[in-house]
Every structure is written in C-alpha cells, then in structure tokens.
Image 1 (cartoon, helix red, strand yellow):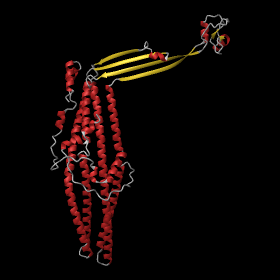
Image 2 (spheres, one colour; image 1 turned 90 degrees about the horizontal axis):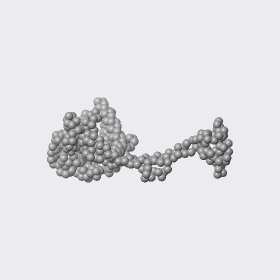
Image 3 (cartoon, rainbow, N blue to C red; image 1 turned 45 degrees about the horizontal axis):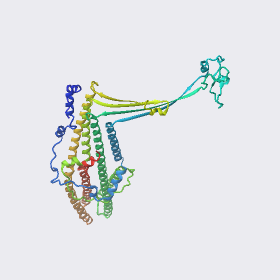
Image 4 (cartoon, helix red, strand yellow; image 1 turned 120 degrees about the vertical axis):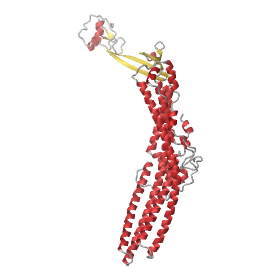
Length: 526
C-alpha cells in the first residue's frame, strides 16, 4: 500500500482530481511488492527430502493404528477448555461480521410512548368564577360540596354547585380530579450511501477476521490433536522407562544376594558387596525418578482431556510401529494447507482492507435520513393522516478539519497492515522451517533408532555372557556391573529413540497441515 505524503493528503481533502487519485491508490488492499520482498521463492521440493510426492491425505491419526489414541483425541475435542475457547472466539468473530454487514443496510428505529396525567381542581375557584353572591369565601372544598352540591341525575355523584339556591347548578366543575391521556408514535430511518466502498471494505475486513477465526479453530483442533498424541506417546515411553527401571532394580537386588552369598563363602570380597549395594542404590533412585515422570506424563495428558490430574490414566504396552511416509507435498502447498498460515493471511487481508477504508474516511459521506412523528390524546390519532408528519433529509458530510485525526488514523491503519504483512511472512518462514526440520529428522531419527537397537541387542548379549562368566568365576563384579549398566543405558536410549521418532511423525503431520484446510473450506464462510 502506497501512502501519500502529508502535503498531498491535505490537498486531497479539497481537490476533486485528488479524490480520483486517492481512489485509484486504494484499489489494492495488500502491498504485494512488500510481501514479495519479505518472502523467498519456495523451491519445488523440500531440501531435507530427496523427493516430495503428493502429501498424505485423510485421517493422519489412523496411520498410528491406535484406537485408544482416537478415543482420547475425541474426548479432548469435547472437553478441552482451550479448544472450547477457540470455538467461542469463532462465534464472536462471526457475529462481528454480521454486525459490520448491517452498516450497509438502512437502519429503522421506532418509539412509542403513552402517558396519563391527573389534573386536580379546587371547587372554591370554580365557585368564585361562577359570579354568585352566595357566601363561598372561607369555605373549604368539602364544605362547598356539602352546602351547594347538586346531584342532577340521582346517581349519587355531584355534577355541579348550586350557588343561588334555585336548584340549578351554576358551576359544572365540582370534581376535584380529572385525567388527560397522551399517545405518541415516532420512527426514524437512516441510511449511509456506500458511495466509495468504505463500508464494503470494513464489512469484508470483518468477514476476513471471521475466516481467520475459523482457521484458528482448525489450527486449535490440529494442535490439540497433536498435543494429545504426543502426550500419549510420552506416557507410553514413561511407562516403558519405568518398567525398565523396575527390571534393573530387580537385577541389582539379585546381584547383591549372589554377591553376599559368595562373600559368606569367601569367594567374593567386601569390595564386591559394596559395589553391588552402590549399584542397587543408583537403580532405586532411577526407579523413583521414572515413577515420578510417568505420573507427571499421565497428569499432563489428563489436563488436555479436561480431567482432574490424578495420574490415573494407564498407558499402552508399546509404542506404535510407524508406516512408511508417503510424502509431504511441496513447500508451496503449505500456503493453502496449514490453518495458521490461512489465519495469518486472512488477517493480513483484513488489515489491508481497513487501511483502505481509513483512507476513504477523508472522502465525502452521504447519509439519507427520514423521520415520522405523530401524537394525540386518543390512540386513533396515531394513524390519523392529518396528524402524520414526515421528512426526508439527505446529508453530505465532507471532512474539512479534524486536527489531523483522519490522517493519523490512516497512517496507523497502514502501519497495522504492514505489521500484518511482516507477521504473515514470518509465519510462512517458520512453517517452512518446521517442515524442513521434521522431514530431516524423519530420516535421521530412523537411522538413530536402528543404531540404538543394534547397540541394545549387543549390550543385552554381552550382559548375558558376562553373567555366565561371573557365575563361573571367570569375570569380576566390575565386569558384571559394567555390562548391566551398558545394557540398561542402551535399552533406555532405544526406547527414547522410538518415542522421538513417533513424536516427530506427529510434528511432521502438524507441520504439513494435518488433514489440511483448503480454500474451498474457507470459501463456505463467504
């Protein structure tokens, strides 16, 4: 977006030629040149992968073949508070879009009022006005009614005052209270003509915000699903590590018993006993650590599920076997797949539209207003054509001087739009980085897992051989403890490598967009 200078902006307020120039400058809502300058050209294939066929489609959770994981994700979608907040945010943005759209339509306001007023009169005043020579001075209202009141129709109610004694009421207002009704009806119609498209830009910006909120909702769904999957696999790893620590502790206890018996027979020395006890203490400490980590992993997953963190969730027996990755698509595909990129793009477009609308604030505004008002003591008077009064007013507003508010608001909106461009470009670069890292780790973690499996298998075979040699006296306690420690360490690293590879597969699915958001899905909101 190209913003005019201060001097040029002042001229735009008064020059009809400059108005045309301003409208021409407002055609594009996003500074494409600035965006292109911030984004590098994406390669055809990922640099971390030899080839990148079409990305996997469908349910990425199904690739792990874990029904428990599916149930946990479904539970989290229903009960997780962060995701429910994202749903509420989307509802709020959708309502805001409808509110903004209402500015394009005429507004009608109607009012109706009804009142009833009581009027209190003084019979003494009426008597004096009657002109009679009767002695009314100094009498109260009750005394006047008692002395001069006349009931002409015999209904028990006084209709007047007979002041001269001829039986005829000279004053017809003996009642001290009567009522007056009043009804009023009014209506006002107001409609601002969207001559320059400012209201349309603001409405489109609001709907872009709704699109962004919908993409945020999809991103929250994907993020929650991947977080549950990673927490689930972390819990499985924690269980396997805890079980390994239990087996290690049991093996150290067995070693100590054997060493103590050998010491009693004089075959082993006290040094062997102390080394065995030291190894057992280390194993017991590691077991306590693994038990704590398993409980914490269980609580972390329970919080994601909206449950009380009581560490009651049990893990599966083993980590899943990973299928071969079909592909990850091309880097440019992320722009239309990742929901966080779609959300950032929608917000960038919304900021550009608001910047354009802010510039149009300096153009004349045309507003049509119509008012209708009527009132009367009878309800039927409200629809009496003779009482109706209406008017239609067309107003033309041209900003002349507002202390620089409009210009400053336009500059602020432009700065916000530029910020959104930088944020979008950074989000795209971060998405590229996450995808490249996950793809590179996909291959390297597989190599590491295979290497650690071989190290574990060889360490287990060496431990078994050392145990037999120690039992026959051909190996020392140092050899046995070293072999056991190597095997425990190798197996622990192998379990960790399995979990890291599974977790990285989850990160890869999230990096390339999971089940994918598409432009067609977002277009449904329009």
